[in-house]
Length: 126
Image 1 (cartoon, rainbow, N blue to C red):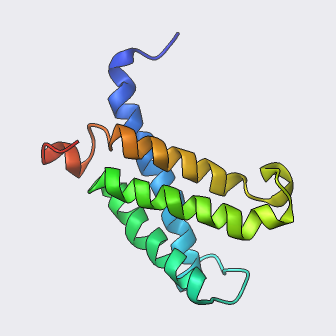
Image 2: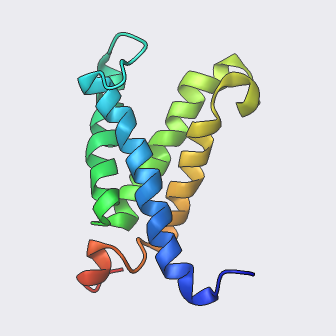
């Protein structure tokens, strides 16, 4: 049985929350070692970690969803081209699947907004 269309806005919110929680965990790994981050930190990884924690946190609650998601989409594209693409063009072979998925999910959120279960929606800016 298909999910009714009336659930679209709710499932948009669920997707935003789940993706943001996983993205947020990348920053937590970088700064707090939970789980341990596999390489030494450098300035670029520090900036990425800040964007992951702050941007991920804002997306979890759905505050400033559109601009934050747009910035994070760009960050994910940069991550792909700096860290993964030099090892080959195919995400499945270069380990860049997550970066590509984050890039396009965040781009979708930048266009669609945070859904009905967001601070933006409560503020009337969803």
